[in-house]
Image (cartoon, rainbow over all chains, first blue to last red):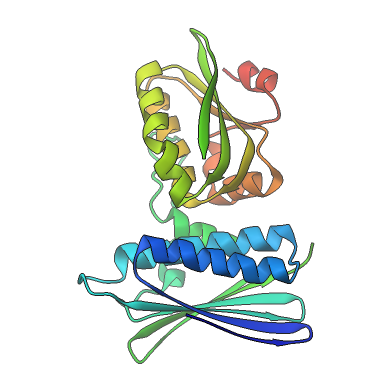
Length: 147
Length: 111
């Protein structure tokens, strides 16, 4: 499901997917088409793909405890020199900002890669906010569009 | 995503990855990579100059390989990642355990 609005220097794309991997691939393709059609800098497209893939993959893996189909909504909003990505799902309550960062270990033998995806998102996005609203997780990430 | 063995040596195995190391890419080469690490049990040089994208699943693949090799005193070294891929490695915190080098000579010197 796709919807969009375009107005000069701003544009909004609404996407939806069901909670399965082929839908994730399709959504990322649509998101890339949107970003590339507006000639976003390559670095911004890379970062957008990274945060989208990490968060959506986590939703697919952990958000739902049943085998039902669930809808995940994604909005990409391009305005001024920022790309804002909002991801909304009705899965288990999950605030990625509340997850502690990875423990710094001196030896790789003691290190683990738990929480890596969320850590990468926090390192990549310029700003992140989370809220829970009427049984929905709403995660908003902002990426600057400097070349 | 493709994996190619460039060179095998008693001291190291030199492989090259190309493409996107995302969920789909990892599913394409992950098993082969793990099998190589498990079977060769030597230092690993991973040329990533042709990897255009790296997600956490790809980092986990490299990290797991590096950790497995470290248990035997061996290293996994990355060679010549593209700028955004290198930035992702640095942001992940794994560059501390997986050295990033510019070429095979520099990588071999770390072994």
